[in-house]
Amino acid sequence: MKKLAVIAIGGNSLIRDKHHLRVEDQYHEITKTAHHIVEIVKAGYNIVITHGNGPQVGFILRRSEIAYEHEGLHFVPLQSCVANTQGALGYQIQQALGNELKKQNIQKKAVTVVTQIRVSKNDPGFLQPTKPIGQFYSGKKARILKRDHPDWEMVQDAGRGFRRVVASPRPVEIVEMDMIQTLVDNGFCVIAAGGGGIPVLENQDGCLEGIGAVIDKDFASALLAVNLRADLLIISTGVDHVCLNFGRKNEKPLSRITVNEAKTYLKQGHFEPGSMLPKIQAILWFLENGGKKAIITKPDHWEKTIIGKSGTHIAR
Image (cartoon, rainbow, N blue to C red; front, side, top):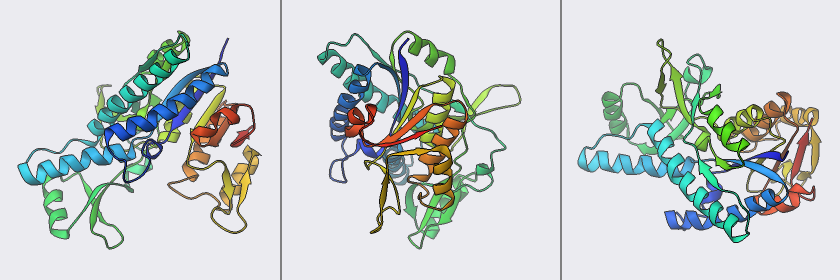
């Protein structure tokens, strides 16, 4: 039976720089990533791909804000923005990956699953939302938005204006898990849990309702990998290795570390919030809940990473 790898692609890694923000530019970057993904397939793995969506959700929100300001159109709910990016990015990854598989005469097909992920209404993240989204507003504009949207939380952001913040709850359950498992078992390359999944709550009747929140993509990927009993979790980032003292003269790249070593470095404050910290935390959760091995590195190093010649390898 083939080994299984869950591969988490960062949303920012799909955009080269501020001068290449168009959908066409994004697809160009995805085609390069698809080539590296196929190298993992050739190494003997079935694959499930997750992806970030931070910049892409930001674009949708900005369009929504402009439409609201100039034409009075309604805002697009955040959960719908996540769903939109799952479809749009899933389509691009699915097409690029399908084309690359065909070029290399590999008899596999890619498929995208629009994925809901249940969160707990008692998650502490809902008590104090901290995840900023959307643009900056003046105090007057923020008061108007708060009047029109009483459930929104608006905070002053470093003197640059007011900004909406939302909760970032931990994922509890992947709603479409049985569908994803069936597709994996039948040899499909599956794209799922995009943007951390669409956050949903279960109401008193047992029905699901979308909620305006953001689930961390790496934690959703770890939950997916545990549920699938994946052999490997790969989290892409913009650097070759995880480093101690990152950006300093005494910077030290890490090639192979254990769970205990990772915990020690985490306590010592080596990993920045919003950057490497959630990746390390997600990997530790994966490994402590049945996972075997995880790797952090750049996509163009995946070929070397699979054979142990690049990246940061973390194992139990």
